[in-house]
Amino acid sequence: MALIQLRGINRIFRQGELEVQVLKDITLDIEEGDFVAIMGASGSGKSTLMYIIGCLDSPTSGNYFFKGRDVALLDDDSLSQIRNESLGFIFQSFYLIPYLNVLENVLVPSLYSSKAMDFNKRALSLLREVGMEERVRFLPSELSGGQKQRVAIVRSLINAPEVVLADEPTGQLDSKSSRQVMEILSRLNSRGKTIILVTHDPETARYARRIIYLKDGCITSH
Amino acid sequence: MDASLLTKDLFILTVFKVLRQNLARTLFALSGISLGIASLVFIVAAIEGSNQNAQNIIQLLGPNSIFVRSGFGDKNSVRRLTYRLNVQDFRALKQVYGIRSAAFLMLKQKRISVGAEARNAYTVSAMKDFLNVFDYRLKTGRFFRLDEYSSFPKICIIGTELSRFFFGDTDPVGKTIKISKTSFRIIGVFAPKGKLPSGKSLDDRLIIPINTYRKFIEPEYKRLFAIKLKLAKDMDYDYVVSQVKEVLSLRHKKDDYVIVTPETVRKFLNIFNMTLSLYLGLASLIALFISGFVMSNIFAINVRVRAWEIGIRRALGATRDAIIVQFMAEALTISLMGAVLGSLLGFLAIWWITPLLKIPTVFPMKSLFLAICFSSATGLISVWMPARSAAYLNMVHALKSRL
Image (cartoon, rainbow over all chains, first blue to last red; front, side, top):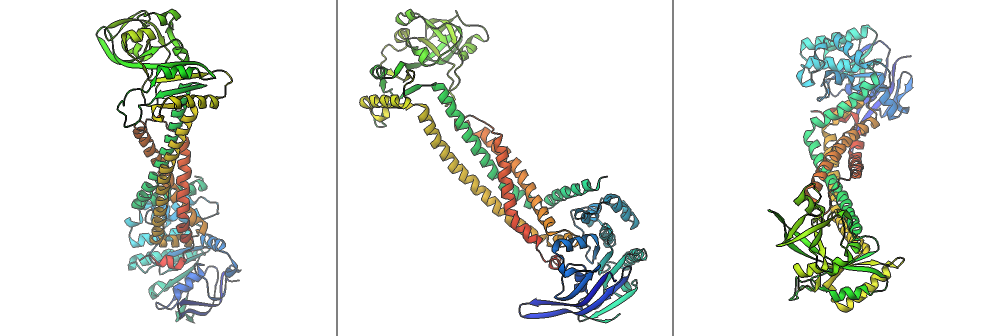
């Protein structure tokens, strides 16, 4: 059974009288260990799809099964737990908390985790892996974009999730940093981590094993 | 390293970092809370102080006693500033049924000297029952003998403060002291009586027998400063007081005297306390209410500003409760700091103002507990709504709110 199963997902946003259908009848399976890029122009619904997969938003209709569980039946606390333990997020604008240093930022998910592990040790070894071990006490404002994104990647991995969701992870990076970030993600995937990447940049999508194109809320091709 | 400990540390660390990051917010909320708490602490101290004051008066008055002090008559009287009670009043009051003993108090400020050292002090006239009725005890030496009341011996009993002033640590009994220009022999030192509520000491006085007083201090006296009555055993206190009132009301106008009983002290105290509690209580309640309101608004704005932070925390797995707990912890930290700061301010106010209010300076430790309770309650109640709204933010909107 696929790790992520989407069945007939629709997402409609209502603004007063206006209804906008952002996702139309999306059916999609993502297996464990896959590296999927979701591509499309802006407004194609790719970010909304990622938010739904990431349990940050819920579909207007359709079913989403995560590890076989119907997400619609789960309460907020259970969804928080899934986000915390099974999903890791990477965003275009990093979302590092400005008043916490690199190590503290990386440890934020551990605040909400019920897993018992030595987060501190894990954080340091992950930071070493992405070449950030020298900067554990730096504030986000003292880092370059590429460094911030590497910290964000470590943060997404701290609770050892099954899936990493990356929303335009290279959107604010120069080509060199983009390459570094994407190489880290590929390396993760080669070690078995499932990666879902949202991007409009073909250069970034190249790293994926599989590309899904979205247009006007529909999957046009795999 | 223990992981759970680290998590707890990170949580606390986060709270302090947030407070430092939002320094203006923190200081603003803090000042409101601490002012409210300061006035609360002050009220408790003031009430405690005035209670203690009343206890002192009641203790000074002694059990089963009635104290009648001269008034100065009515405000428009020509003879203002003369004591209105006289010896006839004393005789009449002494006859009241239920009075066991009575004595009147007369005193006059005089220049007292020993050798070259001199100061002013009250010289007090002692009639036969005076030392007993006014509850004097001896520290050293002796009281007056009966025959000394009817003759004119130049002897005196002095207070500990006078003794220390003139003689230091040595025993003054047998030594000579001058009242104006007349030399008196000291026969005793009375045990410390403490201070009047006004702060005036009762231990820098000098007591001489009544006839001597008449001869050397005030030859033409008729007017009394005060009369003190002691009740016989098993007499109904209220009944005797009512009799005393009746006798006085037949002989005098209302403004001529003040009857001091434990009950009147308590009554006065209650009025004082109620006024104090009412005004200061209202003030502190308003201050706390306003600071709660301010804090609520500051946090509401803060939730908007930090919406994306809430969004990312939710994305990283924070439950709604975790978000509420975070904001509550920030509020609670501000509140506790407010309690400490407010208590300090309050204690400063107590130290500064209570001497002016003529109440003893007490630092009631129970107000610290009250301060913590009140400020925590203010913080937690006022931040509850903003914290809840933070927890229920739409996560996608919250994440996108960062520009």
